[in-house]
Length: 342
Image 1: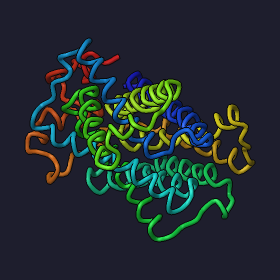
Image 2: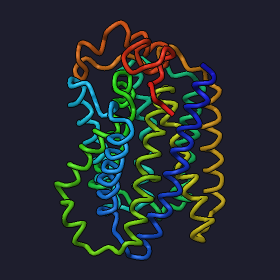
Image 3: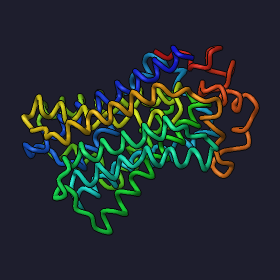
Image 4: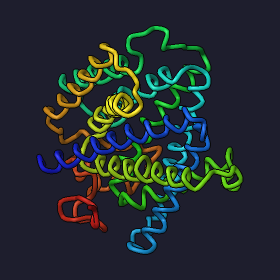
């Protein structure tokens, strides 16, 4: 159990590390005016899907299969992923980047709240303290305790909170689905749905007509692989091994890593409140490592969203064990981890 939790923690921390650094690369491109946020968000999903499909088709063709009864759920999660990015960028247009980030990082609170209401998860004092440290640290990181960094209005508040709610839904729904679907096909079909969602707003052929130079396409590939495909792969594998609340708290490392990378590579300043916020986030992440993964932390999925088969004894047993998957089920090892997982 300790080994699984350590591996899961390293995976989620790795995802935050990649998201933070790739966010700095994206900001570099935005500052130079080489690409705007919305086309880049669309390209991330489309390129990530294309690369993952080719890799699985050539190397692991068996993993392209997905249970038909789970397909529509994966599609919903993929659309949620695409709409989360869309609402995040829409919030930026209504408010500021700091406001959008702060509202986005309400997601760990929502994950904890929904886990209690829907899945009857028991929140310990340690987890509550870790949540307070992580969210408070994010506030200091993204605002630097400068009131001028925040600009709230009703449209921005609605889109920002909607983005946080959708990301919380993505985390919790992914946790439930990964009990029955292996991570890589889950990512493949969710990226396909996210790509289709983006194509409604930015058709793929219009991206090809923008005349991006080969150097920029190479950077798009880097962002799609190391800022999208690999970190989300680590994130969902972390969800297999850890409770959703723990994963969402650990993901708050992203703004800390992003701010540090921006300081090192872009020459941006770090204020004392931001440094304090970074220490608070790290303290929250370390604190959550002290909490013991409770047997009922995964809980049971809500009946309206999940099929009757979801409540089978094997799946319930796996959820209670914290392993994230049915023991001895198809496509799983005896310890509950997905076969072929590296």
